[in-house]
Structures are given as C-alpha cells and as structure tokens.
Length: 355
Image (cartoon, rainbow, N blue to C red; front, top):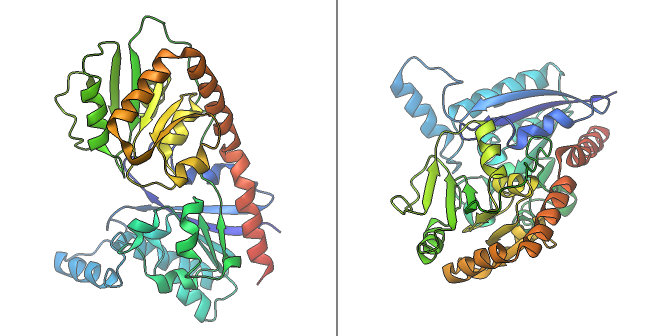
C-alpha cells in the first residue's frame, strides 16, 4: 500500500513555477506514495482573524520559542495536518521548509496518541543562520531530519540521533532549465547571478568595478532586492521576471557568477548549471558538495580581484569554458528531481514500516 504523505511547503513569492523544493512532489512515484501537497503562504493570510490586535497577540505567542519565520499561516497548516492525522488519513507529514513550518505538530504526534503518524523535516539554512529560526526541542521530536548539505550535519547530529539524520542533495528541473542555442561569438560576455539570500553583493560590486573598463563583459542580476550595484554602467538588473524570461536570461549568459556569504543548497546554482553555465563562485564546503568536478572555478573568501581574474580566465579560454559547461550540465542531470525523488520514497517507506 502506498505511503500517504502530507507535504507542507511555503509558497515563496520570489520562486517561479519550476524552482524550489515543491518540484520534488511532481516526481514521486504514485505506486510508492500518495502525496497531498499543502501550500502555506509566507505570512498570516491562511489564518484570518477579525481583529488586528488578536492577530498581533497570536503572532507574538507563536514566535516566543524563537522561530522568527513561523507565521500564523504555518499554525493553520499544522492544525489542518493534525486533523488529517486524527482521522488517520496520513502516514507521514513532511515539512519541506522546516525552518518555517514545523513547531507544534511533531511533539503532539510523538507524545500523544497519534504516534502512528511520522514527521519529516527538511532544513535548508546553514548552521550559522539557524539560531533564531528553529527551536531545538522541535527538531528532537521529528522522526527524521533531512539536510541538503553535508555542512549541516555536525549541527543537527547534536540534536537528534545519527540514524534520524540524512543528507539528500537538492534537485533541479533539468527539462525546463536546459542549455539554449549557441551564442554569437561577437556578443558581449555575459555574467549572470540571481536571487538575494546570502548573496555577497559587496564582492560582486568589487568584480564589476574592477572590470568596468572591459566593454566586452556585462553583468546581469535577476533580483527584486537592492544590491548596491545600482548605477554601475556594466550592470543590468532584471526585476519581476517570469519563468520563461528567467530561463532565457540563463541561456543567453556565458557564465554564472555567484559569490555567497554562506551556502547549503542554492536554486540559482542548480538552475545555472542545468542551463550549461560554467560557474565562478565561493569556495565553500556546500558549493564543493554540489560542484565536485570541473564545473567552474571557486574562490576563497570572495576576494573581488580573484573573482574578476576567474571571470576573465574563463572568458579568454573558450576550451576550458566548454569543458566546464559540459561538466555543469552533466552534474545537473545527476541532481535532476527524477533522480532525487527515490531517496525520499525510501525514507517515507522506511518510516511507515516503523509504525
């Protein structure tokens, strides 16, 4: 009998229709698990309350345990999942964005009379960012913790037994994010970055300033946030792009330039390599976990001068650039969601058998 999985995920406004953890749900084998997805707004809208004062009071109460990203919509989602558990309509509750959405239900299920339901939480943030985002007692109540980077393991192994912690690398939609037609040789060399979380905008500005005299190199940034690069002549910012525009920007670029302050998994990194872009990024353990081969060049400490040198090196060495592009696309295929999904299916099945 298939495992009945209730999957809760946060509906982030900045993520397109082919990005994010929810893509996993499209690739799970229905013979192994029946998934009931539940999208949670990143706010309070899913728990309408008539009085603003009551809303503020309740928001304050649910965040007193230190989970700054937990909103009233998350409370409503946990309440609905509890109802499904009471009615025995669920075998596994999976919090796809556990920093946001898991607070009360794991303890209620583990300590109450509903321990026939197992809970799973996938955590995305680096250890340095987790303080103030999670309650350690909540993590301890989960039946299984899934991490997206080996760099997270030491932190979580202090909170739960080793057999309840597992690293499953993040996936990417390689059918949608794919290489485009070859670019014309006379076109300017385009470096692209996207997103906003944990981006090192200061380092990126340093690169753009060092290469300002190079009219043959452009920098394209896809973000709705302030970056500090506004006003630079060789930088163009793209805001509020749709999915088709986003993939087109990747396909019309020559290089993914992604300096980061910290990292675990990264949608932009995966989407860029899926589009066959060689990478210049930060030399971090998590980035090496996702780029173990010749996918690009990694720079320690985000030194702007060294980042700029890496950009110029790949621009002026088309053979190396082609090799890195092939490696990047091959690595993305290894991390495609159809290859990642069976890991989750095995976790769900193993948890169901433990009931």
